[in-house]
Length: 205
Ligand SMILES: Cc1cc2nc3c(=O)[nH]c(=O)nc-3n(C[C@H](O)[C@H](O)[C@H](O)COP(=O)(O)O)c2cc1C
Image (cartoon, rainbow, N blue to C red; front, side):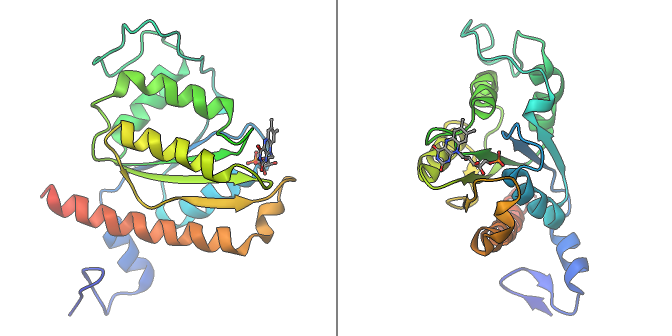
């Protein structure tokens, strides 16, 4: 028997059912937090525990800001052959789900995340119809603007935002563990990504 909502046989065990539904899904998580034991990474970790995939912490790599040379247009790669070109871009191209997580800095995303975004200028036309997930964590102010920046990134790339994104409230490292709502919203985001993935995958069959 088929569960109409999820399209999977209802007698299946939950993990089995989820694995079935995640079939062929490749997911990359981009973390814009430079902090060890980061709150953002904590939420990305929850998402990864549900969906699998690879986390790329931008501060672990050498990624320069965009030099605006415009030579990259339509090429699918940047003329600057740093880690963005060598490691991050190939991962983005191979993934069908891209989740961006950033701490809120001055009501926006972190500079690491912004540099990442700008460097994807060479990927315009290459990320179409990939699913996007957004997570931000801030102390109190500006989470909405940071989410808007990430969701605008998805729209510019003709991607499909899974939902409006997760907004976590935390200041010190580890504090996010007390934000039950953000943890719950992260799990909801995981569910929504699987739901959308099934739709996109069926469409491509
Ligand atoms: C440079 C800087 C700017 C910040 N600006 C904001 C801000 O505008 N609004 C806010 O609510 N929190 C702000 N914060 C606090 C961080 O968003 C908060 O500590 C968050 O938990 C960091 O996430 P992380 O642990 O994933 O790095 C700022 C922190 C730093 C270091």
